[in-house]
Image (tube, rainbow, N blue to C red):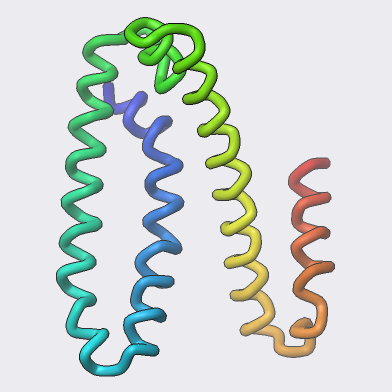
Amino acid sequence: MLGGLAALSLDAMASVAYGPEAIVLVLAVAGGAGLGFAVPVTLAIALLLTVLTFSYRQVFAAFPDGGGAYGVNRAHLGRRASLVAAESLVIDYVLNFAVSVAAGVAALTSAFPELLPYPTWLCLAVLAVVTG
């Protein structure tokens, strides 16, 4: 079960890596009153991750041979619902990758300001390397 949790929770963990930072930046722009919401937002994220962990554990118990969103939907809701789940996962993975690359390039350009005029080319280079 721990192996399954490690494999399936990578997407959630990647989202947790950049999501709270973006939330805190938005709250910081709102000023002192906005930063007062940082702790409640952090607690909400922790609660969401706890619920997600228990949900994954239930899926592992019901589908010990695997399945994920596609398999669960296929077994309980039919082919069409399973295809919607599969499509949403593909879109999620593409967007997750895009945000991760953009965040990495933003970190790189902040460390090396001479690269600041080339963020699009750097993103395309990372995409080419990963694709290769």
